[in-house]
Length: 307
Image (cartoon, rainbow, N blue to C red; front, side, top):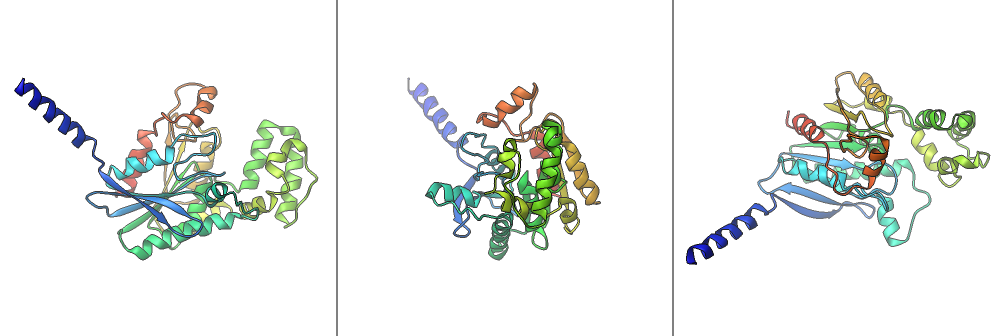
């Protein structure tokens, strides 16, 4: 009985030990707009990866109201478990929604400013030898703008190679071709610095008058032009089952940044999960909290940062 008791104690202690975290998490307020989580390996880290989320009211974990995958949290955890410190943050609109005080005048440049302040914060801390930016989806463009003359490396995950107006035209042409010319006309008006209420009701989710100034501020940037300005190592990653950003977008970025690395991951989708089935399975994965981030993706990022 005594030996059995000792066995149970030893087993219990080993379970507790195995579940101990290998990193420490710190909550940091970068500014009045940006709150985030810094995760640092317990034995310290040389490199920091700043993760920037995609479009919409996306939080630091990669989640929105009814779309919860924790994909950015899972990516951050995988990196920190491989001795790379990570910082991920809520987009400023997330904080505003929680406080019930949404600024209707948010522009794309506000997201760039937030990302820039995050990079500058950690550069001023001088705690890490190198800082890398990982931008997902819309965060790819935000990240490459913030990375210029600041970061030591840039990683684009599912980032567009075209400006957002051309992306919209392509998507409309494929899904609702009868509205292609209307889309071109409205986008032309926005490009001239004006707004309009003359658009098909079916396109209200894209062209509502309330979001037109934001769209105009976004479409003034061309990713293939911006990525050429980066004088640093660049890794471009896209999944072959990404429903939102096709691999052609990644090849555009790769062609523009001549020394960049391009990795196309078979069966990876927009939320960074591997999809074996059809588009229905793909769509369901956008709210799959049990989903796993692609191991190949994690391996590519770790190898790139540790070069």
